[in-house]
Image (cartoon, rainbow, N blue to C red; front, side, top):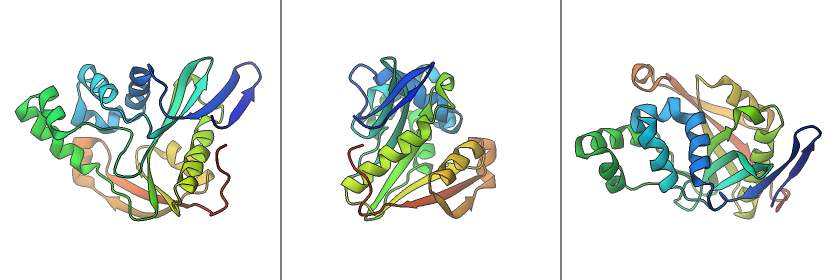
Length: 211
């Protein structure tokens, strides 16, 4: 378990490591709600995308927020060659067919981000719309930071697209700094965004652990 935040009138929020058993579909729905606009060209239609994500989750590559026994938020991260969302090339081809699968694999390759030594890559945050405004995003970021410290990572990295200024503002409040922006106007018509900003947050050696 991680941080607890009691909010009068809405009940406590508990942050824990890993997607709870049986909550894979719910996690996939939250993930799609947050990132479907970005991933849609590669994984649409939603009727295939959500079951695909749920079936190939690496449950131990997430921190989750629970309220009232319900999953209300999660943050995925990539570490040791594994990220929250998985699925092999053959799994994509089985789900979407050979031609459709090849096209989707090419698009998915555009999102590939590999960490450098000593770096943890965060995949982003998904919070239930009804639970926003309760500080859940901040709690999830701090728990990911605790994971990074325990794994002796010196830095957390994430990428945020230009059509998500709200997420970027949250990351800046939690200590992330923009280090570069890659402009891809040729992808705006295809993927819906035209720039990706890479942000870093340092991880202190004495960062609080096991919150």
